[in-house]
Length: 130
Image 1: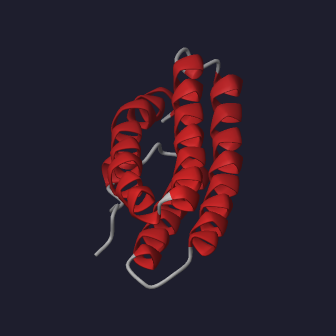
Image 2: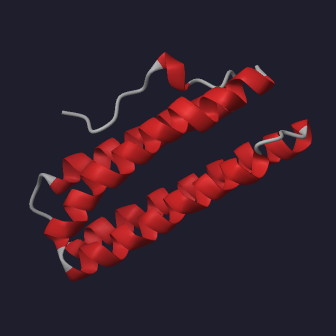
Image 3: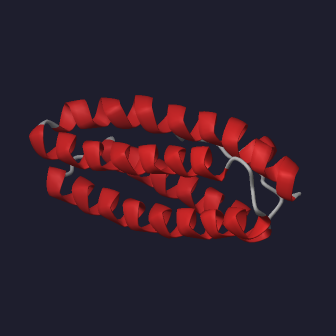
């Protein structure tokens, strides 16, 4: 079972951004599936590192689009991006300290963040740029 499901409501109306959102969801779901299998904290940390790198690059694209458009909510949207990156760092640390706590954080925090961010920040971005 997937942790996150893509919904059309998550679309911002930009094919590149939407494609990357789908890729992020796929990466998070692959990590979630990996957590259900016997694996090491080192493997989980490496996967989280890859996710962090991908999401950082995606945020740079999205933030460039917002700056170019003179998007009024740019600062708040960027702050929310930074919040997610901080949460991923926290997950990486949690897995090295206690994989069970790291798993619970992934299930709760990331799914909540993506659902909230896509439905609020990215929905408003879509209305502005779409």
